[in-house]
Image (tube, rainbow, N blue to C red; front, side, top):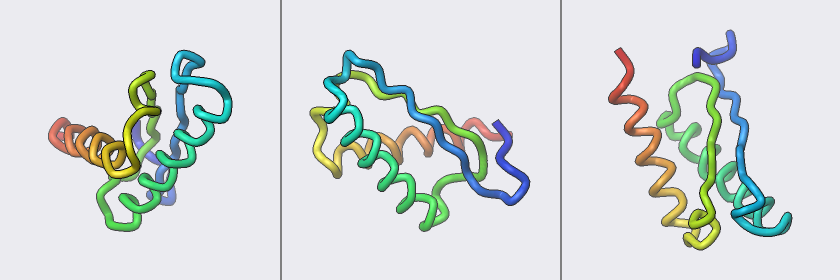
Length: 82
């Protein structure tokens, strides 16, 4: 979706209980937020509103693996833009 007027990003996370207990889900959310912050700082996240859905296997990825998946997903979004 188009982003906020200031050209920033807004992010919501959908992490179901199937991913794990509350501690696991919150850890995953923090890790995703850290990667998004880094990617946004590097100019790799286009302005917009994002919904990030995590599947159960995401909690098993190491920090770098999770970041690679997120960067790849954002790269696919750039390919879709007109």
